[in-house]
Image 1: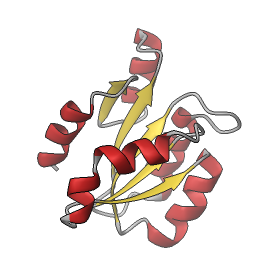
Image 2: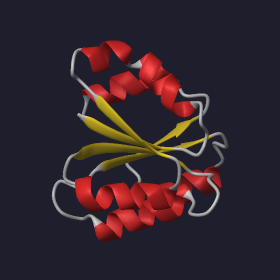
Image 3: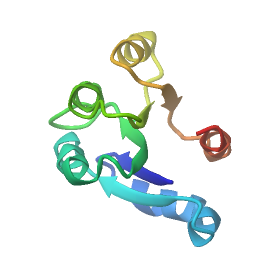
Amino acid sequence: MKILVVDDEEDVQPLFLQRFRKEIKNHEVEFDFAQSGEEALNYLKDKHSEVVLILSDINMPGMSGIELLTHIREDFPTPPPPVVMMITAYGDDENYKQAMDKGADDFLTKPLDFNLLKEKLKTL
């Protein structure tokens, strides 16, 4: 399962690679990373059919995760569309409502509960 993680924080990539090292070694998951919404859209232009799940931070400089979600739902509707889970340090009702209204499949708060995330991945 190919997962695209979109987050502007540099420590996110090593954290995911460390927390999922067993699953990566067993070829259960494969991660790619983008540090902005713009970078994620460029990546998806060529590889959207490979990506099963997108984990996107909401608060990023430039394009927000909500704006990215809107582009994903408009630009890559071909079946099956990627599952999109939004991640934020601010689990407020407004972000949640906005994300769900724009087509998010799930909403996670930081710090991420990696055990919960792994359970959610089993259902995809």
